[in-house]
Length: 119
Image (tube, rainbow, N blue to C red):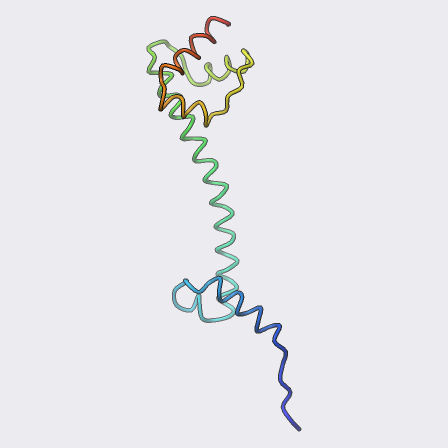
C-alpha cells in the first residue's frame, strides 16, 4: 500500500499562525498548540489595551483641563466648567479643551470667563 500525502490546507493555516508569532520567545513560537494559545492571548491583550488607551487619554485630558481651570484663582472646578459649557451650548470635546489648556491658556481663560457671564 502506498503512502497517501495529506493536503496543504492545514499546513498553510499553521504557517500563517507561525508568521504571526515568529517574534515570540521559546516554545511560544515553535510548538503548534502553544502558538495558537499565545496568538489568542496576544489578540485579547491588544483589544483590552486599545480600550484602556482610550480611558487613559480621557483621564489625562480631564486632569490637564482641571489643572488649568483651578489655576485661574477663581474657585472653579472641572465639573462646574463642563456643566456650564453644556449649558451655554458650547460643545467642545475634552481633547480639544486639553490642547487649548496646554498651548493657549489665555484662550481657555477667555472661554471660562464668557461662560461665567452667560450663566
